[in-house]
Image 1: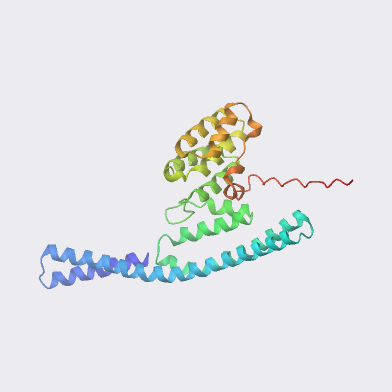
Image 2 (image 1 turned 30 degrees about the horizontal axis):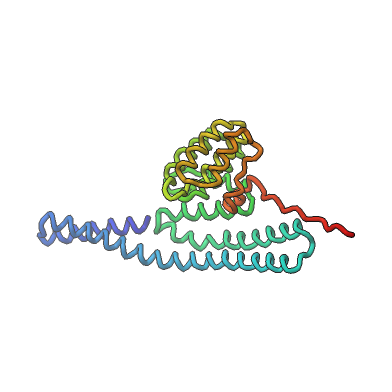
Length: 273
């Protein structure tokens, strides 16, 4: 916001000086506009560099945490101790620790809010995603409830939209789920980016008993994206085999929404002689 104000003020001063020196109207307006653009560009470049430094540190926290988790997974695979359930609890605890650290670190981005009008929304989006991964859904819902041009969450990627759809479903607001899906699925139609949204929405419809509507949604999705999972689920519903509906093919993106948990592989019993 300050960037805009400074640019307008300096642009106005530039035009005034030209006018006082008898410069023509066209050149006076041009000088003001050019000054405005130059100040915007210079401040934006400086801010981008500073913000990138903070974002780099934040990314370092995330990468470091993920590295520790991968090391624990590798160690468990090499020498299983305590069982799968205990390992999952340990990994979840480890994840929550570095996510909380990243969440706390976002305060370092707040000073840029007065310079960048969208920074507040970017911070809110990051915090919502961190809380979601930590399963602190009360805080997620609180952030998602904030509305406004300069506040609230930026729904600029499929995962963020899918998170909001999942929370609306959990809060039993199907009208809002449908409205959000119809609005955003079209916006992400290029490059197969809407696959996750079609998967989530069709799953929600199936859970609500709207199988025919889910089948129609999947038909639209498979034609638009040529995704194998959507096509398979459409075929399953078309053959009245609802129990075989599965979004497992969407992988980690699907399971990170916590609508379902991945099935654990069955341990084979060793038969003695």
